[in-house]
Image (cartoon, rainbow, N blue to C red; front, side):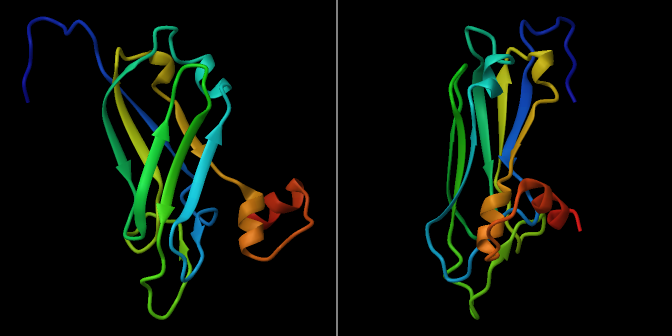
Length: 154
């Protein structure tokens, strides 16, 4: 550990952005180039990022064994998109890969280290989850959001 007698001119912060890690993240069996995308409208950045933006100096993209590509775009007042591409075609026998924290499950998370640190970004954690996509993967159609939330919370 190092200490300094003078404070730095600017402190750094960390923003976590990702796709919901759990049952909502499911890669179908025998699939290559399967894309999971988490969109967020301009309201995600408009009220939080200063007019002159933030300086990102480190970006850590994290997935597990099936992850092949990751892409993140974020600008003030702009649409934010975080995208992970997966491949489950290597599994024998063919099997779906569920989201989760273990290495054999999947995850789709980005950590942005930036400056100047903004206190309003300290607890900014964006997580994307699309219930309708999960139900389509499971072959369930024609449900409303109330039913979907009850099914997921069981």
